Length: 450
Length: 165
Image (cartoon, each protein chain N blue to C red):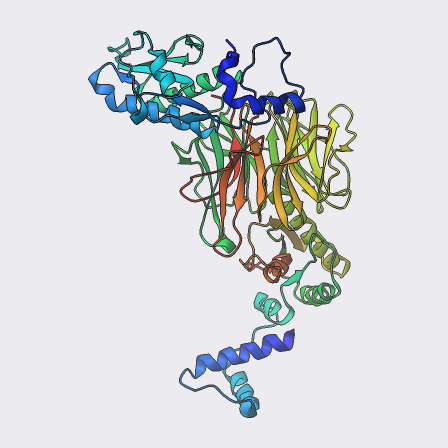
């Protein structure tokens, strides 16, 4: 992967200075710069994405749709800005004709994405697949940014192809993995506030392909993906009391994780998928336990008489963070699994809940309550460098994008008619956006890249 | 509390029996009360409704607390007496929290509240095997508004008498 040359980055120079000042991730002076997004981009990168060329007549609409999704993903990240097609003075008729760089430069484009779509002849299974090819051009330095690539897929998977292209562009420009070809599982909420119907629901990261996974008969809360994204673990009231269940997305039949008469909830898979952290309540006291899925044994990890819940693994699976009110108010504690000696890491004002370790390992996201407001925030794993990213009547339950750059959470409006919606915000606190869902939506969890 | 509940029941009964009558004045309220009592079907002492109507099926908690207040203990003493007198009934104590906490913490908090009630009832002579507990956290508020007057009613533990008993 090539880094972007200096001249491309004039518009984000201020952001780079911030990054250099604050983060330790800054580059040495003589290395080529590239878009550093840790401390945020001040100005989005102007890009031109002319409609992908349909090389066969029967994919004309598809080519337009793929182009739209690529643009929507990239613009949605807040890092890119689209120069609309009406402003283009050059056109793209094939992937191989030379790009007229001055004509794209004239409309101030810094990035150009070109693509073609065609329907392939029948393959040996008798299917007619689509072939989508694309290139990314650095207009300022007049070179290709990475190599041209192609995806071949069944036509019904066109959205995934578009997400993969957007991930490629994102990663070539930022040097980091993208997050567009991913899914979100959450809880859809219907009906009166005093008697909500709740259904597990899954969708693509941009809200497409939405499907319910449960009927709504039982209250369900806080679903989470397994690391391979093939399974969901969640808490259900199907038995009458909160019980952790696993559901394979292939058969969608929920199974009880641990058959005991106590209430179990707050599950989370280990990064290798072999263990699950849960909370179990016995005689009113809630502690954190770890279930070894293969050996089918359970270890108790906390023994305090306080509430210990909302556990999360570090990406290497060696440590956990959890929430405890052993210091009276809920605070975040971290411990090594081989020592089980919790140390408190949150010391700011207010209370701290729902710790979630970043997939990059550098931050822990949390929900904070302070002076009647709720915040989503992040801190280093030793508790330093706390930053609050949001503030409202009720913000709760952050979950990380696969690349650890964006947080998704739910925000609940107050009052009888109020309800929760999903929101995303960059790690920088910028680009706060509501995700459109057909119903009230809460408890999101973001999958890894597919 | 009991008196208020009873007189409210009378008023409701009056309204139901005589829909065409205009509002009554204070001066003839005694007569109304008498008439209402004749129209009312008494709630049997051993029915679950008796506990709801005459004792109170719930106790309320302070913010982020599972400690029983003096008022809560009085209600629970009456509940315990009723349960001792009606040994055929099983109960489930539901613990609830207001919306001003995170979902999973509130599940644990609701469990703590239902356990407070359970152990108080056991201390006061109710057999442990008759009492189940469940926490709903903030999933089932009693009142939907987002002010303290609703939140204080939502921080509760409700004694549900199983109808099969």
